[in-house]
Length: 297
Image (cartoon, rainbow, N blue to C red; front, side):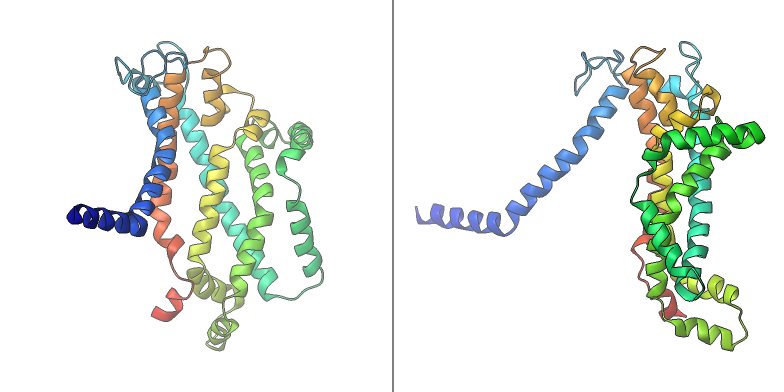
């Protein structure tokens, strides 16, 4: 009897110290993984309907993935790979150009003192108080009028949509990058300038290497926003060949393809892979320390 009480006491001590934490972790893990498992199950379900969806389908098949890579030519004439390429192109270009512009603007606001500096910073902050979605109608008519003068920059063009994405991401990210630059000691640039470097050379060779973690964060945030955007892209893109993946997949939920959830789930899983790969490849930069580069020399 005493041995049973001793074992019970040891188990209770272990549960209070560690077991309760493990239980919470398992609950959180189940909460996070269940939607992913459900989407994987839907992607291999031949029925393609939510009403007949089960966690373990009766007759699993890879037909939905085959239709994705073949472009759905047999039934839907849906250019999945083209939509995926459009999403990747827009998100990578917006991430690279937006990160470069944010870095240049933030460095100017952080290091230089010029007329209108404070007003510019406050203007950027004020613009960010209003979500970009509030300007949907204005953006539509703006691109419509621009298209009359420059059709390659108007509605239904990737370049026009790229400009809209860049305008929406510069404000917040510039403030974020400026705060990061403010924490870098001025003495590093002064030492480089004593050796004959210009402001731009000091920025490129001293500041940017130290700012790689923040550059990676801004690039990923921008890319994820553009890659997953549906509202702006669905309003400004009108031709099926110009669609991004998120806009093209709407045809399988409401539209001409009559609710095909199986191929929608397969395309969603394949479409998520580029973001996962890029995030994993940049995770070292994200967790890197601010002064790591300056200490190693």
